[in-house]
Length: 513
Ligand code: UN1
Image 1 (cartoon, rainbow, N blue to C red):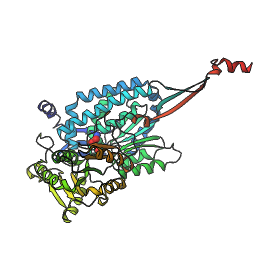
Image 2 (spheres, rainbow, N blue to C red; image 1 turned 90 degrees about the horizontal axis):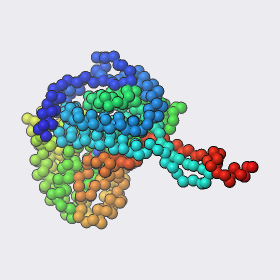
Image 3 (cartoon, rainbow, N blue to C red; image 1 turned 180 degrees about the horizontal axis):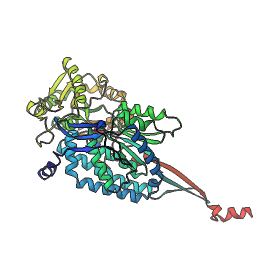
Image 4 (tube, rainbow, N blue to C red; image 1 turned 180 degrees about the vertical axis):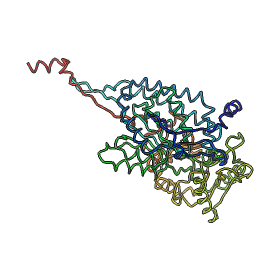
C-alpha cells in the first residue's frame, strides 16, 4: 500500500469545490453551498458542495429529455467505448478517488481499493453486456412467410439515486447501466458523498460522455429527489438505499398524472442472518462473522445482522468472538492498522447509540470492542458490539452499523428459525456455516433471499460472478452485476414482417392471382 499511500498524500489536503454538473452552465451560489467534513475528524473540511436548485433540476430534466432520442440512436459500440474509457480514467485516478472515499466516506484503504475496483468492473461488465444485448436484434422463430425480431432500446430519462456507503461503486453501477442502455441520466448522489461523485462525473465527461446525457445533481431529497420523482418525464428510477425511502419514491412515481407506468429498480435494506450448526468450525465462523458484521463499520446492506448459533457450539463461538472483537482497532481509516473506521455522520451515530443503549439496559451485551480515545475522539465512531436477542422478529429496523445480534437455537428448532427469517420480510444476503452438506443445501433452498453464502462471509459480491440484490423488503431485482440487469433499463420491441408482401412467399402471391 505504500506507493498508493504516497500517491494519495497530495489529495489528502486539497479543499474541493463541488456542485451541479449540468448540460448548461451553473452560476456559483454561496448561499446554497454546504461544507462537508470528514467523519473521522469533524474539524477537517473536505470541501464544499453547491446544491442543485429546483429550477436547475427542472432545466436539467428538459436537457435530458431532449437528448434522449439522439443518445438512444447512438450505436451501442460508441456508448460502450465511452464507458470503457471512463473505467480506464478511474483506474488512472485511483489514488485521488480513494483519498476522497476515505476523507468523505470514512473508508479504510482496503475498502477504498475494493470500491474503485468494483466501479471499474461494473463499467466493463455493463459495456460488454450492452454490446451483447443491444447491437443486433434477436431473431425469433415464426411461421413461414413471416419474420420476427426482438429489438432493445433505452426507455427514456432515468433518475439514479445512490447511497453514501458505496459512493463510487454503486453510484457508477447505476448510472453506467442506465446510460449504456441508451437512457439519459440525472444522477443524485448522497449528500454525504457529493464531492467524490463530482470528481467521478468530471472523469466521465472527460471520457466523452455528452454533458446532457449524464448530469450530476447534488442536493437533498426535498429539492432534487422529489422534483425528479414527481415529473412525468422521468421514465424510471434506479435507487439504492433504505426500504422506507424506496417506498416513498414508489408512491411519488405512481401518484403522477399523465405519466407512463414507471420503472423502479430498487436495492434496499437487509436483515441478514447467518446460521451456524454444530458441525461448523468455530474459528472460521468467527473470522467470517467479524468481516461480515464489522468490515466497513457494518455499513453495507449485505452486512450480517443476526447470527444464529446452535446451542452446542454457541459458547465456543462466543468465546472466540469475544477475543477477536477485543483485538479490533477502531480509528482513522487512513491508518493501515485500523480495522474499523467511523460511521458516516453524527445522525447515524446517534441512531445506533440509541439502539445500543436500549439493548445494554436490558442486559443483553455479549461482547464489545473498546474505543481508544486517542484514535476516536474527533470522529463519529461506534464500537463494534454483539448483543443477545430472542429472534429476528424482535428487531424493529435495520441497524446500519457495527452491531451484531446473536440468537441461540436448538437443533430441533431449525425450521422455525428459517420461517422467522423468511417472515421478517427482508431477503438480501444469508449464510450457513456447516460441514453437513445436505443441511446447508436444504437451508439454502428454503430461505427466500437474493444471495446465499455457504461456509464463508456474506459480503463483497463480485461483479459478473455473484450477481447481487434481494427480494421482498430488500429490493425489486434484477441483480446488479448480473446478466439480466440491463434488461430492466430497456424497452423491448417485437417487429413482425409479412415477408410475403415483399415477395418472399410465392404460394401466398399465387393465391391472389
Ligand atoms: C450495499 O451495501 O448497498 O456484496 C450493497 C456487497 C456489496 C454490495 C453492498 N457488493 O457487500
